Length: 211
Image (cartoon, rainbow, N blue to C red; front, side, top):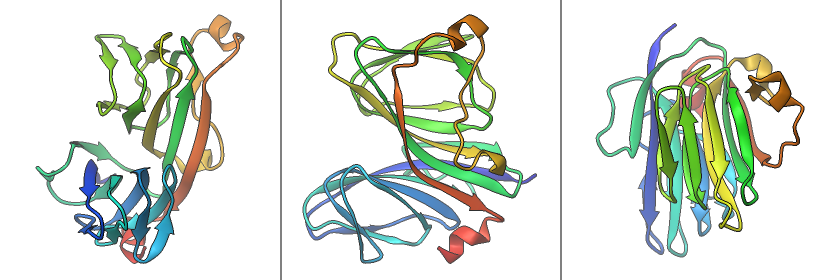
């Protein structure tokens, strides 16, 4: 089970500009604002795609790209956030988003794999077993595998939304991963909505290199 570097990058790309995804391996890209082109293919605002380190991201108009990269090698100081995680292949790279209406809660729960969250808009209170904090737009946090957390959206925001990238066991392809810990909470209505951008099964890291 190799230790790999999991990194999140935020690129502000000017009109007619471009950036190259750092490193090698597997990458998931979200067009956070504005439209992007990935190796010449158009990616509309709010959409996500699987690609590889070394891929070129361009923008016709000013745009912001969020890029999650799973690779070998040391942490990149240019990344917004990096973590070292143990990965068993095959694994599943998932990019999705969770949207909360005002005051909605994700009851205390766990997920079967580690991942980053990046708040796109709204405000979210996160309560783990040993700490709590309030996330605002642009904030990033990391949740380890099977780490209990409760999330509560602001009741004054029209919508609270975060993008998430997780590394999961492959058997979760196409399936939800949230496990509510309290059986009584599990019976309560869930008001948050999850939109899945991609599920990419990786047999090895070189699959990302191949794009």
